[in-house]
Length: 425
Image (cartoon, rainbow, N blue to C red; front, side, top):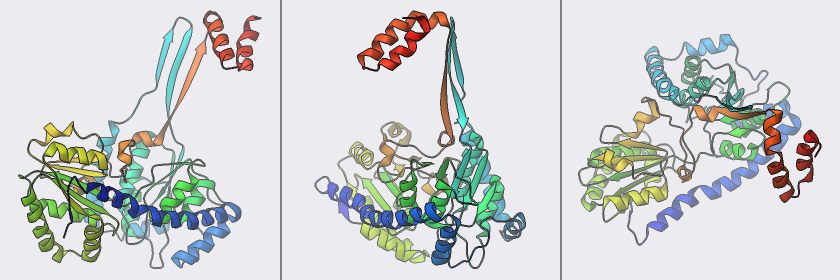
């Protein structure tokens, strides 16, 4: 089922992974751009128009009432609520370690420091269709709350048959402030620029379809965003000791997300590739999203056969995957060799879904090679930093000549004059 690559043609795989996104995204940018311009110009009227057009719902009020929220919450199974509460505890425990402190440096008439401040108002997009993920609610809202975000609003598409109870339950578990029944690019535009009834956010986070991702890219600058998330990815580095049954299961766990998802095995064992393909054929028969998995694995999956595991890790670092599993002997010894990955899963019993749902690490991760320069969502994503400086007259006078010369070397004479006027120079 999986195509086999080697050193001679692995660049074909790299190209294929990149190109799977570009064409669809370019078209989505045009559509999202037109929607954003309309919302900026016409506000609530435009939002209602696109909600009717894309979701088939006539909205009178965008905001869910407490009564609506409680009614839908009560439809969520209690056993699932308890599971989400356990997951929330794990996520909170992990992310509490990420908090940063402000600091002050004081010496002889000089005071300098840095203040770590929460972003005040954050909008989170939550998909409401086939990809309705309460786990993403937990992963976005909990770090924001730890950071001190004062207002967290959820934007999620309305449905003719009502909102998803799992999403509403996750929102209540997290202590979300407002739930707004808007989806698509129009939701991103409303969050970024505000309307008559929707207050402008300072940051927009959360996953969505390609039009949502395109809209987030277009509004960046008017607001901050978390990242431009592409289709899901997993790369598994495995040696001959790896269990092919587990490898096959984990490859399919990502392939079921989307036909554009990418599942890659990198190994030095030709026999392992053979056994993994056998397992794929066997296990896929019982999976509900079989058609999506088959198309994803056929179009964007693959096995890369290497000379040794260190070479496999080099390839993994080149691809910089969202999820990287290390299914090798002495996996902790290899961990330091991994330079580019959103999240690393070690050993046979740390499969990727563990991180998606329960362990506590964040599952909002850089995709499409951006793990080379960006990080998972976390508490840092919801804070900003501000510096402050105080110099006494004596301390400024001590360095005045240096500042004046530096400013004049850049031909910024007004900068130099700002110093001169204080000392009649």
